[in-house]
Length: 276
Image (cartoon, rainbow, N blue to C red; front, side, top):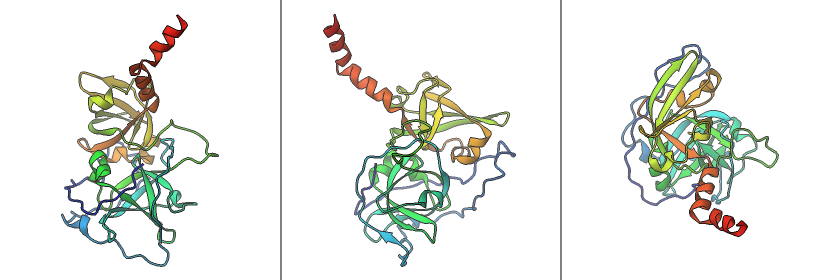
């Protein structure tokens, strides 16, 4: 989880087009997006909207959380930039994830676990803090006002478990290299670094921008993997709205990393020696 801030932050963000080429005219009819004017290079250093009596604020705390990778709703970035307290804030318009929200709750934004530091129920928005490390390691650096993001609240003990175990800890970013239609489904191929790709296996789990997906194939020679989105999923997640060349957050199945750790530590061999 990332909830820290920095007193000084300088970086360059790129512009993310709001809507990708419409490959499935019939599947995007339920989506609504606001056009984005070309942003000013200074947009990230403008002060956030002053607090009103309905804003709530509290210093965030670090807590361990879990997600399923089942996106609850698509939110819209309202503002982001340097805040009066010296940190970097991201404000998102949303409704579903605000149900029962309290300060310090965790919400995954494009698969990145972030802590709610403010929320406004009447205005239907919440604010999370971003650290410089989060911006360096995730695709959130490409966000701008008007960007659409995947949102999911952290699991409760009573939550029905779907998807797979997702921590909201981004392992790295990938780059979309192709998006091809087959019927009303969409094939997406993503290029990933070797450090991440080694944990990705055919028919295994992967969280892409916080969406729990099943890997179809892994292309080691290309450093890529692919997956398919059915028509329903295309309307519920942000991936189809991105263009080729844009970044996505990747979180691999935690079980693969545990297995690697056990093998490298000699644990398996020690068990074998004990039983021999």
